[in-house]
Length: 105
Image (cartoon, rainbow, N blue to C red; front, side):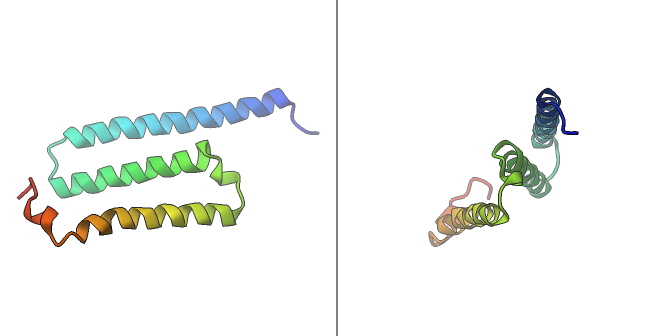
């Protein structure tokens, strides 16, 4: 027999609460990583990894892409990837100006 709508709704809210708890935990962890005395390169890597993980959780659960057709999901993910690559390549194409005038020399 099928579930009652109230039971189904509770499962959905419970799933969102779990995702929210994971996002909050990742956020607090990232704050501690940012303030930690780690070297710059591992710190940046860990923060980028945490940010990507949080973005994927939001995209798949809160934007409901987990339940969409695979073609739509692939289109969105390819768009995000292309945009991310362009965000790094376009500034890098400025002839090295950013690298020459960096604050972290």
